[in-house]
Image 1 (cartoon, rainbow, N blue to C red):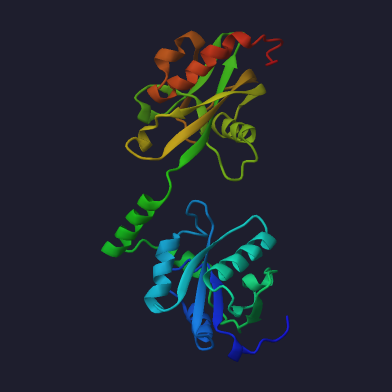
Image 2: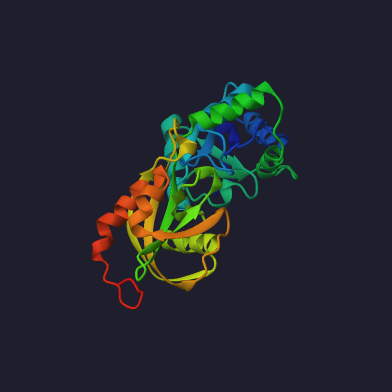
Length: 310
């Protein structure tokens, strides 16, 4: 873009995520450099729009207060992430127009900042980056230590209480020996002798629920071979760990046909047990009975040939 006479410009724009416990020198250098040039300054705080994560642990309001605590005269607004850089650039242009309509504006950032991908219509300029400062590094350092203080504990409680409720996705697998009429179930000592379906939580790296189910089956019953893997349905699980909480577990149930192998427990199971399918209801832990309902409602559809699901 052509150079802009700053004497004719009265709005400076800073964009950042500010995912830190306090502003570091680089943040302050950028904001104060813009304040030195402009009568009015807009600080646009990047917001993911999703649940808190390691990359974006702080909500918008917390970060707004961090900025205003040091620079009470700046105008702070959220700028939400978009599917593409082009859409985000248009969103930033609209935000600036909404807040400072009709006024000349300059966006500021350092090398490697949002300016590298910005394609909007606003004039923009680079400010020299302060080396050695990183919000990512700061968050990494904080994550290594639990601080023994009232404020730290209050912050942890606030973070857990202010986020959206989470439905954790799980998978469970019914491994059935159709020729023997038996089902393979797992035992955990904490369940007081009751049994449960093989399964566990879906990992973010799992490409699908089917892949997650196969991974869990391999981890918890590594010495068996199955044929076929069919999705039967899903249910919310009344897991004791989340009773009284807004969070919960949703499990997708799969069924597979046992082919061969020796049932030996792996991962976090204490044992694997074959039991007659007709005895499953009295043997299962209460939270998994709703999954058994799915099997009993669908079992008559399976016509087994050579140990395979159709």
